[in-house]
Length: 188
Image (cartoon, rainbow, N blue to C red; front, side, top):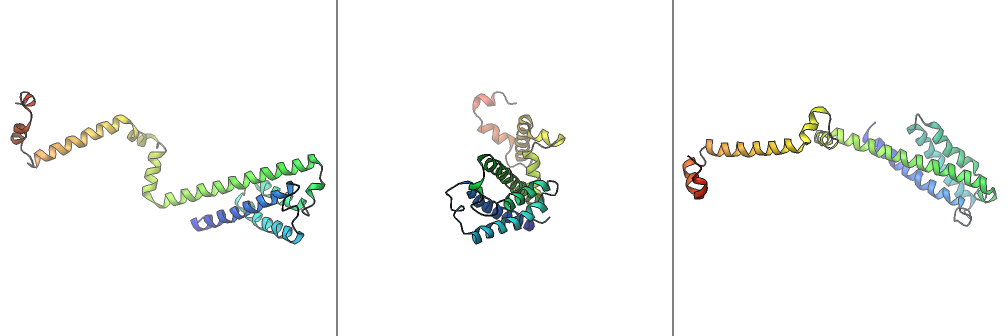
């Protein structure tokens, strides 16, 4: 699945989430949604139903969750339906709404993680960083130890000093003359 398609799915599900939050207004007795004209309410229900199909396609193994969204929307025929329900029925419907809300959010999170993974796989430098961040496995884990970093630092410093003297950028005799006298007493 391409990154562009995943981004498109995320944006569609974010619209579904916004509509779903608006739809939650039916549980509040004096909300704007409870007073909404029926044609606007039907347009909101239609928008949710259309995007619910996308949710069903993404959640291939959990179709019952996507179906729950459609069931809730189809049960509420008009904005004034919920105030007519008993408290127990309204709480049950709101509990189902909350479950669907959580599912939509989890699906968006899943797709965002998938998108991040696709972007990082596309860049090899990100793959290497991801190995080091996650602790790697087996061989790569040794590179994160403090002792390895300390020994690597000493080795690099030693190679730099050796290179300076091997390439005769500095001569040993000139360097000895510039050292403090107490250090010169230890040198041959």
